[in-house]
Image 1 (cartoon, rainbow, N blue to C red):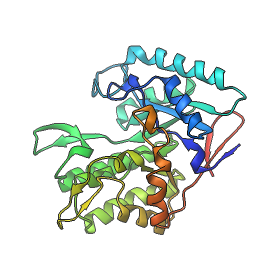
Image 2 (cartoon, one colour):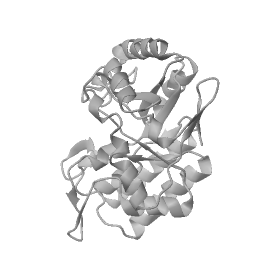
Image 3 (tube, rainbow, N blue to C red):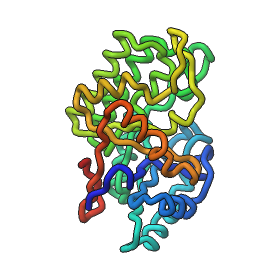
Length: 278
């Protein structure tokens, strides 16, 4: 079955991630009210053997509860007006690849999406969320590109989340930003994996960049114009952390794409509920 971009959100969080609100059922009801017909849950993935970023992701012991909640909604929605998928948003940590494989192969997740959320901030002297960086050193930029492209090449992920989040901290569009962006975009194209215009960044407070102008921390227009030039497949999602935002991308990211003459791809769901870019 084919789904146009205005009927889909595959980036959805809930109270399980500790920094979101709303139950699985509340998101489903809101999605139906907003006219979505394909809703994917992508909770921040826990890790069984360590407490990586505890407080910002689902706790591993809660994973069966998350899965049971979604399976229950899948049964209620079966053959009705909305399709529910179970997924996870996975920070690319190469040593955890076997667990990510387990989610697909043994726990029967419908899809995984990849991210790079955290790096060591030399200004603050601690690891921090990339969206809060004010200065991103060049070596961090290169490490981000390596992590992100390694994730894309792993073959585990259906799409890449907020690939331009590094530009929240790297606040100039120079040759290094262009090179980093090109590497990510070309890799995604070569791997046949779409990248996401992330609506959550459009709902954040604007930042001041090096030339004194202001913009959203992400998505960044220049990155996506380059994506269009390279021919990378582009999708959009809400990255909802509240039920009310489950279709916010239709209000914000859609106009962003239209203003920049960007064509958004839709999705196809095969008979085994596996996603394919369309």
